[in-house]
Amino acid sequence: MAEPRCPSCDVEGLEHIVSKNSLEKAQNGRPWFNVVHCDACGHVYGVFAKHVLGARSGPQLVVPERSR
Image (cartoon, rainbow, N blue to C red):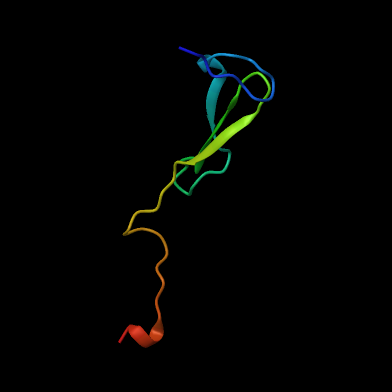
């Protein structure tokens, strides 16, 4: 099976693809997202959300005409 290769520095191997928590955090201290990158050169493969608002949390839109 072929190993993944970084498009920027050509380092090869799955062990070079790492993730790191974002410095930005929610009020409860949990990171908002993970950054997946090459540990050799820093090439970013993607950013994935960790903090997701549920249906019952977060701000809600209230339209005055429809609240009656």
